[in-house]
Amino acid sequence: ATTPTRSYSITLLPGDGIGPEVISVAKGVLSLAGSLEGIEFGFQEMPMGGAALDLTGVPLPDETLSAARQSDAVLLGAIGGYKWDNNEKHLKPETGLLQLREGLKVFANLRPATVLPQLVDASTLKKEVAEGVDLMVVRELTGGIYFGKPRGFSSNQNGEEIGFNTEIYATSEIDRIARVAFETARKRHRKLCSVDKANVLEASMLWRRRVTAIALEYPDVELTHMYVDNAAMQLVRNPKQFDTIVTNNIFGDILSDEASMITGSIGMLPSASLGEKGPGLFEPIHGSAPDIAGQDKANPLATVLSAAMLLKYGLGEKNAAERIEAAVLDTLNRGFRTGDIYSDGNTLVGCKQMGEEVLKSVESEV
Ligand code: ATP
Ligand code: MG
Image (cartoon, rainbow, N blue to C red; front, side, top):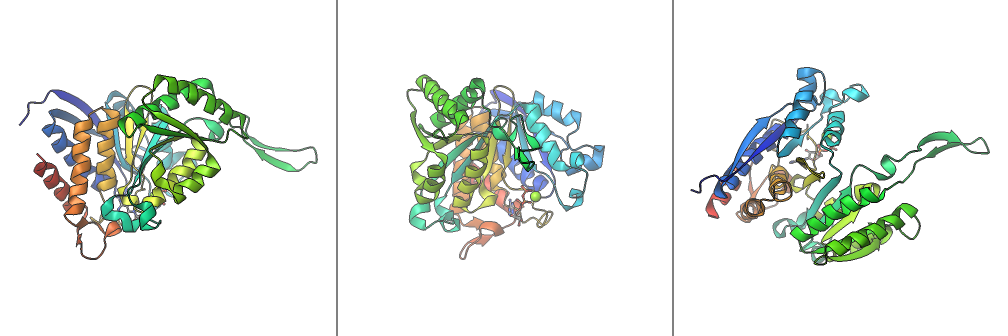
């Protein structure tokens, strides 16, 4: 065994529903893959979401946020559930997630959509189109039309009611998301496609100008531009053409959901949210799945792959990340499947056993 040379503190936020089940698996996988690369983790588990509401009366206790802020990375399970669905708006588990993102100042949301060869049949697209898809959507998360002011309801000259919103991007906001996107592309296949609506929207015109300017800092990454309507079409027509996509908040919201459907397996998809400095937030894209919670049926792989993103994009530990990615592929190759990705001829396992199989795969790669 290697002597630990690097150590990191990780805040674990298991949350609600299947959250604790999948976090427990991911924690074990992180520990093992880390130890094989000379990495030591200090884990701190904190309450968040509905679990925190029951315990403390708020979905994101101050202690949880400050622990998260002081750590090197945050791994979140999932939050929410029927139990809290009728709560007042500001006491919902989901509010805690918004507060956490705000508190960590994470403005870049990374969502990969990878069609694994073992799961190509789960794709909503034809096999020829889906095979080999491996793309990443980098979405701006804290600006644009979802936050722009003025916004609201009013009336027009005819006395008719109107609703209005404002798409605003400042140079600094575009520059920082562009840099995250170029850095991300660098860790992948060095191709970046910037998606906008620069033929119609001024905010997009500035977006395109700034991304083009920032590209000068990254001569090794190939930059292209695409209008969002075309990008939406190309994603289902020929998704293989994309490596890394960078886009604004609203376009990214839509395109990342579209991209996730290409893979067809919600239980497999991780995500990362990154800020300028400070810890990143890593979580599966699925929710708390209350329908299967506590039954050992959850697919832990989305969270395990989120842990791999934590290593790669949060800590710069690419080798340990790749150990985990390879172990997930190996586990699937050995035929193990949770219910959500099960098909004939494979071995149906629960959350815990899936975790144990991934650990075996990590071990066997050495
Ligand atoms: P959100 O909480 O993000 O609004 P949601 O409540 O609409 O999302 P999920 O909680 O993600 O949705 O669940 C949607 C469906 O997918 C459910 O039937 C759930 O059981 C299933 N599902 C979600 N995640 C997983 C997983 N990791 N493994 C197996 N099935 C899952
Ligand atoms: Mg849910």
